[in-house]
Length: 316
Image 1 (cartoon, rainbow, N blue to C red):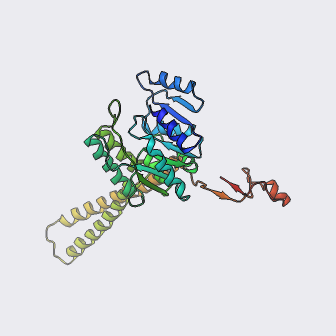
Image 2 (tube, rainbow, N blue to C red):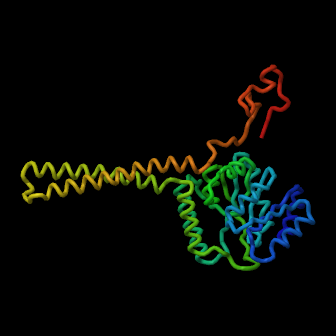
């Protein structure tokens, strides 16, 4: 059903296309059906994962096999309607400055707890990343090739798609599309899983929790030192007459401040370690106009050496 509707929409648009179907180790006979579809149509690529890895990693697997200039991700349960696909493509292609267009739904046909989870994830993302106002993410999205390349360059194992996408680009927009009712089965997204996804989005890419601990530790250290000076001054002028009380307060304040300051310093080091081991690319070239004077080995290109013009003046 999905492939038939996709074929009809692509025919209307007059576009060539390919379809990548990823079987995330389904326990039923999904793979046999997908394999037969791919065997009978050269435009279809079927991939079966060895074990269930979750929607995010399965999506990245599909992106790694996609070859198009524009890549669209969508669910196979027909809640993402193929007849809404032209809306995404129209917005993306009307603005060369955009890297991604989300299909946002004015009314989601999900369970109440999944809708709550979606709102929580959006709230977390909006504060962890500088998301443009009015943009709401979804798994129904159209991506340009440079953004796909940037997303695939991330080597983190605990993948949160929204976090990976927003850490790669802020050139995003959304367009309202219709959200259909689920055709078969039930969703695997429970409220607990939705909340876990929100935590993944917060911790996988952004360092906000560690940075908050670091700032808190520094602030508490400064306050504890100020409190120690205050009580020491009162003791020196004779306003505290209880023997040993000032000593206890000074020791507790000083050590509490030093401990939290140490936690803050450790947090700063952890932030830098996580940024190094996360495997995110240092930069991604979105576009290049003209010919680069150096090849991959850092040597001058043949055109630069001879002074002759190159055969192409634009590369993507």
